[in-house]
Length: 145
Image (tube, rainbow, N blue to C red; front, side, top):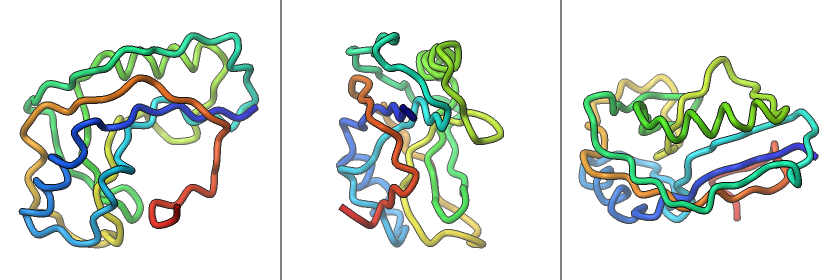
């Protein structure tokens, strides 16, 4: 099966409030905030993999930044070795990754293409839940249910 693995953002309401107070529009519903760990269009067998049940605390650091990917404003999460280690674990188990590089991030807002951002990244800790996995849905839409 094609595999998708993510970690839900546990303090999503706090992060949403931070960006809302800065006046950013088209915010994604905070309950949808997550960090993708694996996005594999290659068929793999998840029964051969171990999924982390631990929570991850991403400490604030100077590498945090806001960027635009496609149409999304994203909070980059750089410097969190746990996320990178897990990404490479899934690659070692045969997962593909169809993007130029792995940049863990939280998609914050849509409709941001060609907009210059002057938004400060979230300054606090980011709390991530355990890994969740499911069959890859290439049609995922933040605006849908």
